[in-house]
Length: 173
Ligand SMILES: CC(C)(COP(=O)(O)OP(=O)(O)OC[C@H]1O[C@@H](n2cnc3c(N)ncnc32)[C@H](O)[C@@H]1OP(=O)(O)O)[C@@H](O)C(=O)NCCC(=O)NCCS
Image (cartoon, rainbow, N blue to C red; front, side, top):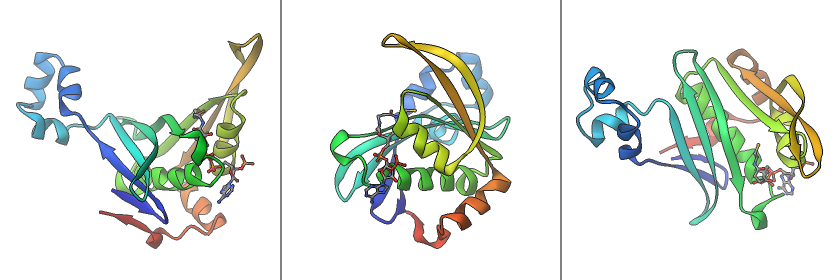
């Protein structure tokens, strides 16, 4: 569990999912015989439920690319009635901690379509804009660009300093 102020991220894990995605040869190569061994090899996706006290208010999914030491957000969702209260922001702070401290990644990457203003704002505030793919989605009669953001390991400390985020306020249980 990762805790920052009133937000807790709890990892959910179904080992069979990971084992089923492997071929027999891969399983043999990694010597995966059971669920416990599969957990140790869960190096590609982490799914977290977001809790406020005992209420599950959303989720965030993170893909990890260990070979290139990169992590991506593959979806962040907050239930509508809990939006605009800073919960996604705190989740992002925990995700960055998880990526850079817990998993020692080199780079964090996200992307968002232009129609999604709230997600765009969140990414723009905490990450560094990297590129735009112009008009790459046709959505409800209009073309929208896709925007790519990043944070490098060496940029993470500056971000923490800028937003006065104290690493000591993050708890790992
Ligand atoms: C995108 C999404 C995750 C943002 O969640 P959220 O919890 O509302 O985000 P936050 O509350 O942290 O930030 C939203 C706004 O509230 C403001 N805010 C932050 N703390 C606040 C607080 N304590 N009280 C009131 N507002 C606050 C933020 O400054 C931000 O304002 P801005 O958009 O003008 O920058 C949410 O809208 C969502 O689930 N959308 C649907 C799924 C989706 O599109 N996911 C992204 C796919 S790329």
